[in-house]
Image (tube, rainbow, N blue to C red):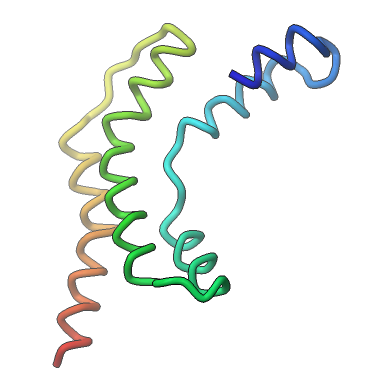
Length: 104
């Protein structure tokens, strides 16, 4: 990745902890707010951007730990079921309620 290139070519450009943080940041899915704001400002389809963000965040539940394990080689135990419930409560439930209210 880019962080490895930076470490090789310009080893003193950024501290190692900042490079690790940059790598972690690139493994995370984008936020729903940012997708909606950028799509609306660019004149795009906001509903499609919202759907893509939700799908990306749901896939990110599985993909982010796999990418972090691949790049850092460490594993931890997380309460997977409670994370899924929290994500559904924060993303899917408000979207569903908004869609129901919008149709009434």
